[in-house]
Image 1 (tube, each protein chain N blue to C red):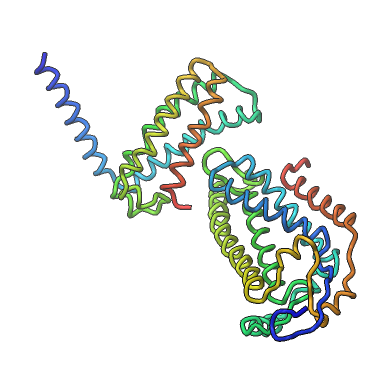
Image 2 (image 1 turned 120 degrees about the vertical axis):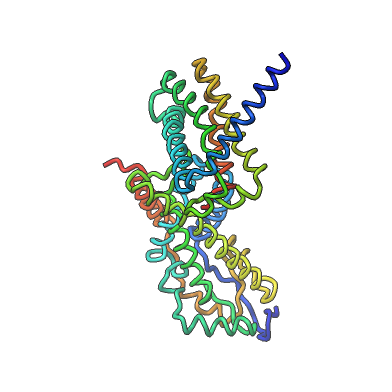
Length: 151
Length: 231
């Protein structure tokens, strides 16, 4: 039993390490394109929920549930694309990302947390809950942009 | 009563600023302060609403610069570069006499501030914050264009801050060094001036506040139409 646990842990660790290494070898321009694509999709799925909450379009709990679920997944995707190798690319990512990695991690984990909260209430079709948690997601976006994105 | 500086003599109270200019000025102070705070804190809904108010006020002030009271008109306070330079030299040597309305340098600061505010409000209409908010005209341009305009919106806000700092510093200089209370005059509309400077005051013609309200209405309507584009 014990050996099995260790073996599993080792496999995961090796797998993660291998993934990390593989990522580091991806061309920096590709990494940038990938992480920017994720953010484009985040805007795509965030926007309609915002418009519904503002009353610009009718509220649709099914769309909110689907979009929030996408956002929850998307929120985990961009971060491993911020490899030091991409600093040579023309992007708005500030160098602080690679200097103050702990702070950057805290900022993106905030988004992961907030989108998880939103996803949960959205899937429960809890409109009041969506209204209560949506601001946190938007704030996590701008909070990170303010710190780590060039104007 | 002895005036500041070397020139003794009688001084009189002269009305220089009409009510519209004063109300415009202090409303703008409040709104622009709020714009900086709301911009920093990403309170976009109110940032945008108050931005329309700023744009309306600035548009009104431009109209008032052509159709307002004498001291509010561009023609009366925009000095040529030579006059502005001469005044700047006098100012530093402290011999410059107080002006009835805007002094030659102050007149240029008014123009710069209005231009920077117009630029700030105008770029704001086309900006986006890449999250949820975009200006009412951002939909008319491509995303990259809106992004570039957003960058200008940001840098111009820093320029505006710099101009405001200069403006406040200049008023402080007049107050502390030249003992001229320009801030009080912007509240009361009245300046205490030495006789020779006050003499021109009789030529000041004050436009009616009703005309100001009408022009503000025109400015606000124009902004409303730009923002909502009902046609």
